[in-house]
Image (cartoon, rainbow, N blue to C red; front, side, top):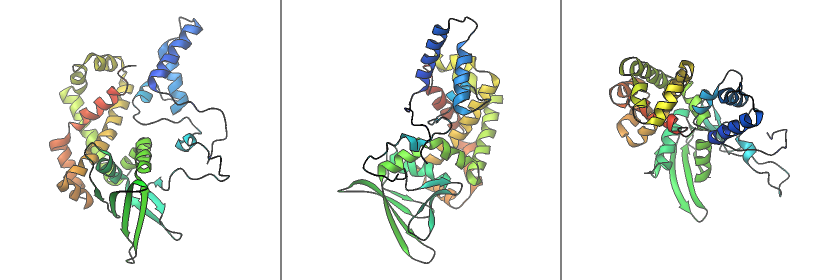
Length: 296
């Protein structure tokens, strides 16, 4: 669906919003108007009433103002009178789905598989094949360019094959990471992994002084952490627990043992692995969030 307004779209980042706030305050000439007030107004307008600048800074994926979506960034084709869909698939609670033929809609990937899929094909050390729950995905390159091919066997034994441009998969997962992550932690294994990381978070903050340790790593972290209120810190910690779920699932692309446990639904095995070996992903997720705006 296309947006109603045809006004120009503006794509910006946190740094530029902060500069705009500086310019706004300078022009207003009101000593009682603080930069924090202006930034909170920006955040509330973008994320919704009650959300503040800390919430916006903790966001790790693109933010679209209400009424807009990623589809609005795709230019209309002048040669076509009919709008084409931005993606051949869509994200629902059960995963990434699309119509492989005229008769049925098929789940291609479960939500929790998407970080593994992304790491398999788009990491610094990509692999050629991803064995998904619903089919086998293979990286191919021919005269039309790099593609990802799906080979899937229907329950009736019918073999289905589909091929997609690699860049479209990358763009979809990268630009909709926040939405995908919310879908992952909302149900099943993602929900339980999220709960495990929250437990780890609480333990690390209460017992190990995690934020104190991070503040000691560099001055930029220290400035951000010292300036945060407790509600802002709670938002940051919850986001870190979610981001850690993504980071953990991505590691399964390179760990055959845990990948098999994940495929077989042995959630307790994964949670035990988090508690025993992967708790440092919380620190990695917090650093990822802090690094996103250390220059603010």
